[in-house]
Length: 283
Image (cartoon, rainbow, N blue to C red; front, side, top):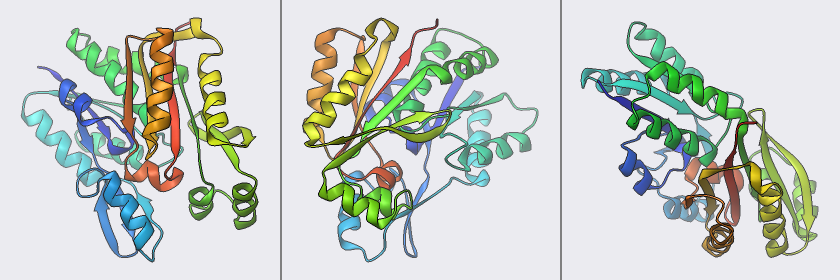
């Protein structure tokens, strides 16, 4: 019996990484008024951004349902596999709760559920570690235990180019967004204890903000786990490629990957966003 790793679409794993490790993905939904799309299934990033600029409705994200998880878990178990799900922080979405409800319906089945307490590739990196442990023959519950312990060491931070999406998503007032955009303020957003916070704000060019993001990530190079570092972006390949090249030149990890934010994450951050995600070594 093998272990199947499951995550959700907010993990922002690239198609190549999902395919390489056989990771299953449960899509969240994006709503434009009455229109509903499944993230990464019938709405690509390019299609999402086109609709953002043409639709009269600002997008809203929706969680995955217990029924969706139940159907997937049943199929995987019927195929003779165990299930480990790691997904979007329970502080940010009800998707984790949906997965837990589905697992409760299959109480005797070999299913482990892990709250990443993170988002984007903060989830994705955990899923990759889980897949590597599964390939190495680590038992299901031990993977879940190790992964849960690892969540506090996942460091996720990103720079937002425009404040419009944070305003329209209800995280800023209209005045804050207008003033911030006029003054070219770029907040650095960080995930702490499963929630998003803003420890720093920069005034000036996006390139200066990107440089500060790189400084944040590499302030204590010796603490960075040398397996995976992700640079994740929403329509900002130039920044992502530059930052990834700098990280590779420093030789900080064997795998420095670039991924694109999906529609759900992009709903809240918008184009021009770029982030760095890594895991700290155990103390």
